[in-house]
Length: 200
Image (cartoon, rainbow, N blue to C red; front, side, top):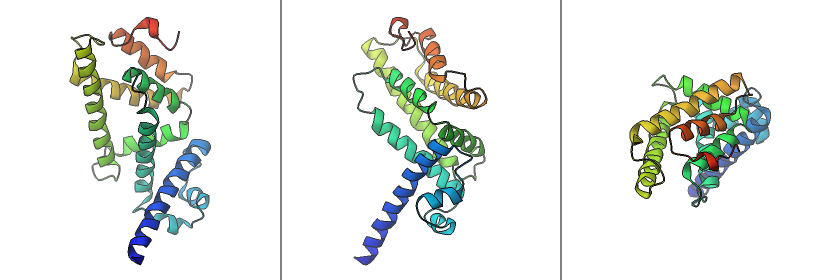
């Protein structure tokens, strides 16, 4: 029983670290989120913090995984809203947390190395995003919401790439309105109605 209790405490502490790290990075930015700062925020030494993770890269990977879990939980209840508009809301929210966007883009680039701890996370995330968009487009075509000639498989790949690319550009030029640019693209593809545009 003691061992099971210790395991549960370890899981709880790990969750506390990830939740606190999300807050610190959102508030202080990626550059202000060293292992030292994150450890101090949860009352641990650097060694104590890394006891819960294999490496700094794994810690940052799990922070992004936690962010995705929270975003999914936040927006999944909006069943009466066009799913593509929910996606635009997520992109607007991302503009409010530049530190997390920088962490995402940096780790995404580094994860091109197949040995990087984040490689599997990004591969799985990409597949999940494609599957999500595939389902959204297929359902939309069946219900008449989206045109029949929208290529389902290509749509998910391109929109995911556009979102990732815009986030990189936005870090260089924060005047770019990521959600608005994606919205314009979706309108041009015929999957969003201009008169319902959130930019109006």
